[in-house]
Amino acid sequence: YLDFVRSNETTGIDGKPMLNRYSTHLTREHDFPGAQAMLYGAGVPDSQTMKTAPHVGVASVWWEGNPCNMHLLDLGKEVKKALTARGMLAWQYNTVGVSDAITMGNQGMRFSLQTREIIADSVESVTCAQAHDANITIPGCDKNMPGCIMGMTRHNRPSLMIYGGTIDKGYSKTLRKNVNVATCYEAFGAYTFNTLKQPDDGGDTSKTKDEIMEDLERHACPGAGACGGMYTANTMATAIETMGLSLPGSSSTPATSPAKMRECAKAAEAIKVCLEKNITPRQLLTKKSFENALVITMALGGSTNAVLHFLAMAVTAGVDLTLDDFQRVSDKIPFMADLAPSGKYLMADLYEIGGVPSVQKLLIAAGLLDGTIPTVTGKTLAENVASWPSLPSDQVIIKSLDNPIKSSGHIQILKGNFAPAGAVAKITGKEGLRFFGKARCFDKEVQLNEALNRGEIPRGENLVLIVRYEGPKGGPGMPEQLKASAAIMGAKLTNVALVTDGRYSGASHGFIVGHVCPEAAVGGPIALVKDGDEVTIDAATNTISVDVSEEEMETRKKAWTPPRMVVTRGVLAKYAALVSDATHGAVTDLF
Ligand code: FES
Image (tube, rainbow, N blue to C red; front, side, top):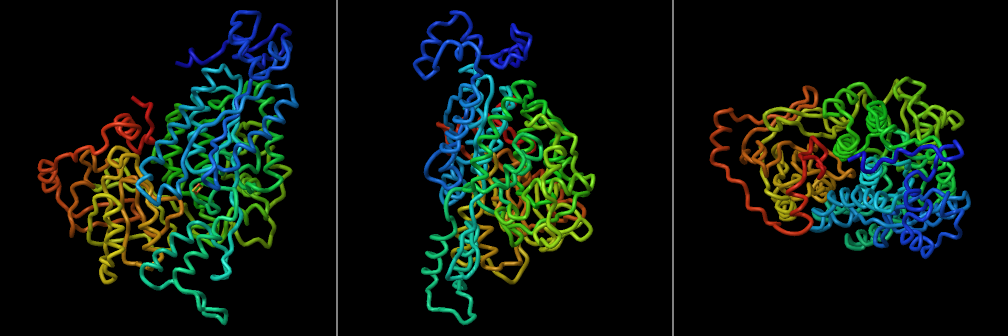
């Protein structure tokens, strides 16, 4: 396959690196006059440019209906301007994703994860079909970043990613505090349980709960940019920058800041360096750079979705990364960041004290990050951040290494008779390390939401709420669950743990375990658990177990019948038929 997409021509007739090593097959001599006619028609100005300029595809994951993505076409235009000014031919195109926060509000959430594959397929298709020599991708929302990296890795031509940037902070005058999209979901729990109130500290407390909700909804998202906490989008952008695939500062620069525009111009310089030195994604996606991604994710308290996406990126790049690597890194890296969802601050706050490069600088100096990895600038990670300011001594967002929030990472890999192939837990330690309770099973998240709405989850006893048939095949699409976890946090139900073969949103927190593998749809133990079974989740021993004997599990397995597939045609049916399990990243091209 790689022979199909690879060009062996690396040196031009002048002995210099050949920057148009793919497009030259279309543009040299008159081998493909129809192709050249099309390219002139599309804007190539003259024959000199036709014969020599590298073609750079600029892929924005743009659409209008989401703050995370609404500005990405404009960023692409800036990139195009900068590429053109440097003598390259820029071809803007589009690929589509969906908004995670919006899809989570309805059954559309099943369509979310598979858009990662659509993005990867689009980027790979356009680059290879159009013979682009290089590729700049501009993603915004959660699935966009891994999708872009997977597409770039598949075509493996000089590439870099510009993150669309984080959203600014929202402010609610009613609640007199900074708010963001996750605040709305959590408020919903209090709204349902009639405990949503304005602060009673002397201000106007006349607002009804509906007026408070309305106020939150109107002010949580003040403009363009991805969700502001250490949710999935910021987690992935931060990791990808720490792997060397985007420019220094890309992940913490807010979407609407002038610095984001400057990054677009700098990207044109960097892609030229990548072309000249033939720096390709597979050179950057290595075991060492994945190790860096895991380190920064643990240090900053990133989303559990990162586990799935890193595994998918590694599978695509042919890097041997397993769930055990996550546990190994989690055991040694302290959780240091007071960032939402478990903490107080947002990425826009981190930007103001130096941003992600300042954190990288700290971790490189401590020997926790590998500063020697190559990056898209042509320099090492350590060289990129050398001139960056250190974190100010009086800042409060990143705790010191000797006094972190937790001495190890928050992501825990659990195994046991409940999840023989593994499960992913996000345990910050705030909720304790061990949870024991009786199982209460729900086939699909909607059933749990309905039970919550009806007030059927009692406060008295410890319960393990199990949401199943929501895995990659069973969902289908391994939908992300935020509504239930946010409602539970908002309602302050501290007597429950949540377990699913689906995923939790990066904005979720509490005692939660997701990605349970094997999933219910293929007859994993999660399908066989019954109401009242005793389940133990133990982050100290990294186990998740159900107190049911092997023989009883065997009996239940024999009596189990796979559910009828309700989706039989269309994109979700295709996804369910092709998708790998969660421990292999839930990708669709692993046969
Ligand atoms: Fe796009 Fe949160 S919905 S980053």
